[in-house]
Length: 408
Ligand code: MRU
Image (tube, rainbow, N blue to C red; front, side, top):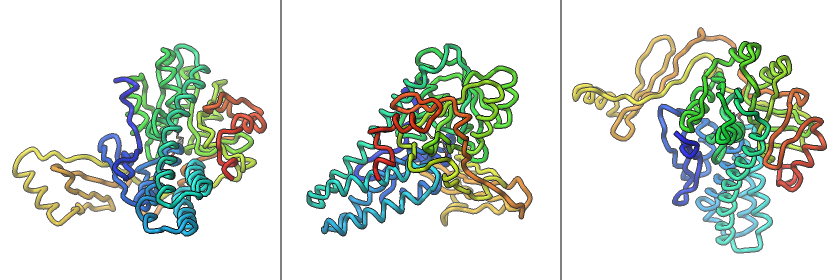
């Protein structure tokens, strides 16, 4: 159990994009191998890869994957660039809120145009190298965010975090969790409160897993527990990541973040946002302009579970073999619950969705909310710590960082 044990998220291997499927973690830890950029889009939509900085890396690697697969059939530079733009835009459109996705895609488009003087085969190689550079830079940025943020924490800190802004949400190390990992290495963390983060439970599944691997002490809480532990004086700081930060410092992050920020204000607790400059969108004057992703009602009306079945006798093995002989087996369950059993390697896996709410209820399920800048004590980027008033100081902090407004 040490910080070196935290997982890597997404990488390039033998000309393919490989990623840890986060939709079933931590109980099922599959690797997904994407052979096409469409596969990367599918992984993003299905939340196999998620978290703003990881999405930026996925966009860059997705463009590189296209350039070295389907794009290999195009010899003409202009046709190649035109098609690359289309592919990059398609990837950027898979989820609307995290600006890093558009940032990664835009940086690849810009890079391809800036290097269009070479032959198409050479350009392809350069494009792969650029995508790998984006991945490596993300880790460097997170380490710097970690160091900058840890300096804000006192010894014996009890920190609350929401969602997963850890290694899994980035190429490696994490943003909000990066601050916690760095502070833990400095002996400053007494404990972490981990919000479970309804409805997809990124806190319970992913943050809890990462902190456990890293050996950082923590307690998992329901989202609605935060208020009472703040009132009881058990929280010294809240640190969250961000999906998009507008020019005035308004912050879009996982739904529930705004409520935490208001609670911090009420209880005199600092509310910190840790994010790379690639999350800052100076093209937006305020958070009112941030598009909030709306998600499937089934995330709220039921729970998704996955696991591995280990038959305990030759006869039960035979039974599962028979069930899955013709491919995935859909278990007939009443009342709208669903369960599919499938073979996976030498074992059997189940994926289930179990209904909680009665059929036919109306659901409102935004994935993110916007925290007004007035509630944000500081924004921690790889370039330093920015405090209110944010407008000019945020712009200065991002100067020369290659944030989205600089890519054009
Ligand atoms: O819907 P998700 O899981 O992609 O949402 C992730 C978050 O809201 C994170 O807090 C944010 O992307 C920052 S990750 C470093």
